[in-house]
Image (cartoon, rainbow, N blue to C red; front, side, top):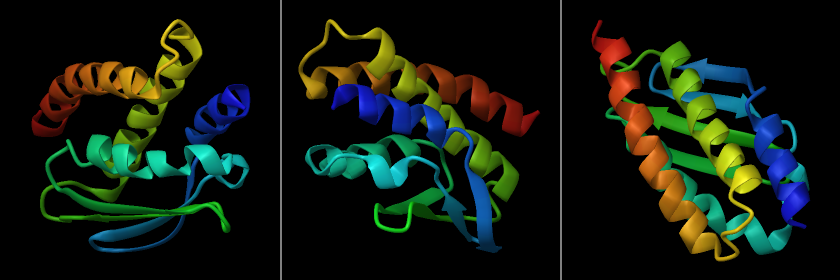
Length: 130
C-alpha cells in the first residue's frame, strides 16, 4: 500500500491546471484517485504544509475526481508560482516517503517532511521576492 501512495505522490508533480480564477485554481492530479482510503486523512497534513507559503489559504482534494482546489491571495503570489510551490511540496513528500522507509510511523515522516519543506520555503520565498 505504501508503494501505491508513494507512486501517487510522485505522479502528483505532473499536475495541470483545469480551471482558474484570480485567487482560486483547480488542478488535475494524476494518481490522486489511487490513494488508498487509509491514507486519505493525510489531506490535513498536506493543507498545513502547502499553507506554509504566505498567500496560500486553503486546499481541498477530491479523491473521486482526482482534482485539487487551491485558494490563495492573488496579490501575494501568482498562479504559476503557486503551482510550482504545490509541486515542490509534493516532491518533498514523495522523496520522504520513498527515501525514509526506516520511518514506519507516518507522523514521523510528516514531521521530517515539514522540516524539509521549511528549508525549501526560505529559498522559494527568496525567489519570489527577487
